[in-house]
Every structure is written in C-alpha cells, then in structure tokens.
Amino acid sequence: MTRDALHFAFSRDDNEIDHIPLAEITNSGIMKDAEHGGTRASFSGPRRNSVSLASHGLYTIHIATENDGYNSGRVYYLQAESNEINDRLLLAIQENSKAARKRKASRNIWQRAQRRLNEWFNSTPVQAFVIAVISLNFGVTILQTQLINHESHSGSESDSSLWDRLNIAFVLFFLAELAINAFANWYVPFVSNPWNLFDALVIMSSLLLALIPGQSVGLKTSLQAGRVLRILGKIEIFKTIVNALAIALVPVLSVFFILLLFVSIGAVHSVSVFGERYPEHFGMFDVAFVTLFFVTAGEPWPDEVRELTEDGKVRWSMMSFCFIYTIGTFWIFLQVCFTVLLDNFIAASSRMALEKKLMDAQMQKNEQQMKNPLEPLLLSLAREFSDDQDLSDRLQRIYQLLDHDNSGGVGCAEFCASMRKLHFDPPIHVTASDFASLTQDGELCDANGELGPDEFEAAMRKQIQHFAQSKLSLITEERSMQDLEFMQFGSLKMIFMEQTRTQNELRRISEQLLGPFARAPSTSRVRRGMAMEWRPSRAVVPLQELAPVPA
Image (cartoon, helix red, strand yellow):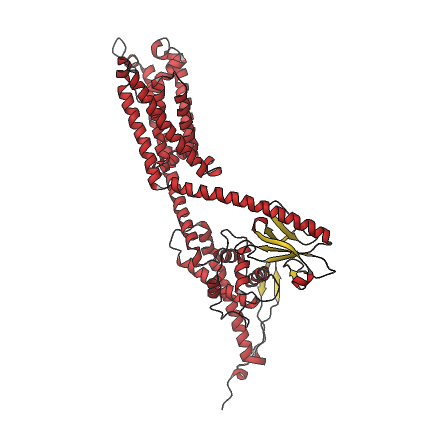
C-alpha cells in the first residue's frame, strides 16, 4: 500500500496485477464466509491463480470502488492469514482512503478554481481590456514626457503628485493582473512561460521604483515606457515575430562576434599606423574603436581622413585601409549578418507555423476521438505487428487482459470497463453503443452475446482494416510524422498480411475441392550462403485425372 493506491501482486513477483486508487474506495469492511458464499477472487497474471475466500472461519475484507473510477465499480475481496492481520489491514485501508479522499477533494476545489479563473483570464474580452490599459498607460507616459520640462520650470508639485498617483494606480492594476495570472497557471505553466517571467520582472521593478521615494522623474518615465512591451506577449502575431527573432538571433551572434573581432583588429591597426597623424580619431584604442563602430553603423569617414595631401594627391595608405575596412564590413560581414538573420527568421517562422498546424490538427484529432475510440489501440497494433501470426498473438494477449474472470467470454460491461484500464494516452473510453458497433450489433458475438477469443480477433481485424483505410483516405492532408509513418509502413504490412491470408484460404479451398489429388508443395529449402531458395515439388497430377467424368 502506498500513499495513493493499494497494489496487488503475486507472492515473490514484482509485476503488478492490479491496483485500487485509495481515493476511489467508496466502502470497505469485513464480511464473514456466509455473507459472500465462498466467492473466488481471480486475477489474470503470469500464473492465473484463483484464491478461495471461504476457509477456516477467517474474516474477509471487501472493498467497493467508484463506478466511474479506475476499477469501474468492481468489488474486491481480500483475506489475510489471520483475523488480527485482517483488522490491521482494514484499519490501514480505511484511514489511508479517508486521507486520500480529502486530498483529492482539496485538489479538485483548487483545480476547478484554477480552471475557471484561467478560462476567464484568457478570454478575449479580458485580454482586450488588459491591452487597452497597457496602451492607456503608454499614452499617459507620452503625455507626461511632453509636459515634464514645462512642469520642472513651473515647479508645480500638484501636477507631479498627479502623475505619481496615476503611476501607482497602473502599477496596482498590473500587480493584480500578475497575481491572477500566477494563480490561474500555477506552478509549471506559469514559470515555464518566458512572457510571464518578463511581465513579473517589469511589474515588480515598477512597484519597487514607485515605493522608493526620491527617484528621478526621467527614470520613472523610462520604466513606464517599457511596460508597453508587454503587449508583445498579449497579441499572438507579435508573440510569433518576437519568438522567431529570438530563435534567429542565436546563429547571428557568431557572425556578430567575427565582425567585432574585425573592428577590433582595424582599431589596433589604425592606432599603430594613423595614431600620430589623426590623434582625435585614432589616438587610442577606445577612440579608434568608437570611430570605426560609427563608420560601421553608416556614418561617413571623418573629414580629416578624407583630406588630400598638400599637392592634391590621395593619401593611399589611409585610403587603402578605408577600402579594405569598407569591403570587409559593409560588403561581407553585414550582408552575411542580414542573410543569416533573414534565413533563420523565415525558417523559425515556418517551423512555428507548422507546429501550430500540427497542434491544431492534434486537437482536432482529440476532439474527433469519439468517432473511433479504439484508435490508440489500433494504431499501436498496426505499427508494431510483424506478420499475421504475430498479430494473432498480440490480439490473444489483449483478450487475456480483458477477460479478467477467465470465463472465455467478454461481455459489453466487462469490455468497456477493461478497455479503460489499458495504458493509453488518451485513455480508451468505450460505451455500449461502441461495443455494438464493434460487434456489428452482436453478429460477431457468440451464442451468449459475448466475445470469445476467436470472435474478438475477427472483430479487431475488421477494425484494423477500417482504420488503415481511413488513414489512407487522409493521405493528401497535412499529417503528423506518426500518421505518415503508419501510412507508409503500416498499410504495406496490412496489404502483405491480407495477401498471405488470401493465399492460405485459396490453398485450403483447393485442398477441399481436389481431395486426394491435391498435394502440398514441398517446403524443402536449400541453404546457399545466407540466402534461402524454395523448390517446388516435382509431384505433378496428370491432367487426365483432373478431367471431368463424362455423364
């Protein structure tokens, strides 16, 4: 027994047979042998043991579960070696299940509140209102900046206090918005979103600056102006552009580093060669670096550098340096920077658009899950089986998992409950109407209206065939890599499997029709290196023996 579940396993075996979530136990108590009439509890496992619960006057613990829970309302019967152990086990189950139900109830209240607040916060009207307040704050900041010099000359303290009150009001509104966002998405969804972290940094900085007295008006207005950048995280198209730019800037940094080295080398060379002639531009490294940086940014070369000699000739030493630097920066490195930035920006935008389409397609696929609730199981089978016999073995193993009581038949209720316990994401939820569709309104069931091993295999083979046909019909649409892989390989396996089954069926029919004249082809194989050659039998039936007898 763990904190959240009661697990079952055979003695000296680490494989789990079944488990009961403690929060889903509705009732538990002790029954005597007469009350359950010697009920036998059986588990499908490696040894498929059946344990009798009626023996030697020992008490039996019964555990009832929720109808809509993991165990689908099943009642479990447990019996220990002595009544003393039964009492301790029952007490532990009751105490832990009560605590688990309390934890589940508290989690449910918290999760419901979070879900409702998240839906409200992310709704279009609320987000539009937040964007409007951010824009209003930016407009007030522009107006304050327009009047800041006039107020400083006039010395009006009332106007200054008005701007401070407006700033505090905006900061409190943004702080409340941040608190609501953090509560609605706490913890991992909030922390893993970089836009939420950016909002928290801007808002907390604004709050600290508003609470600390004596700060300059210019610093406050600069920080207020930076709040408008939060709009980039509120509008989807802006968010896409910023994210694509962030991805594209990473490879551009390497080109920027090479450009920085080129400018630094040019600064060192200009100081050593032209420092004495032009000390105001190339006298020291920092001065030369700033001069070349402004030239790289598009500023013209200084007038002194471009001056001619006294006899009207060009200073070729300086001009050669200018030519080499201009070609290296403007014609090579800057062009490479723009090309790399544009190429990576387009690639990142395309990749993000494709991911969004795939995400929308996956959401649409999940919404359409009710059209074929067995799709996770069918996709797993179609991708993993190797041949016809392997598919039969896999279907038989699944049938053993579904047939919990080993009765050799799986009814509607047992099929629906057992399918829910298979480990798939999303879980398989099958209803009575789905069971009727699977069995073609009971035509594939046996005389008792249940699915036997053969009936289950036949029904699942039909489902796999229909599933493959539906996937192939969507081959022209944009699909995920998982679907494309199934279309390419899974469908080919289905074709080869059906071809093999058809050949076997034709061989069986021919043997029935020809009777003693039919002879199976020889399956003798001759090994040649690593290859195998199949030789047909030399036994030939004469045509006279196969000719129809005249009437």
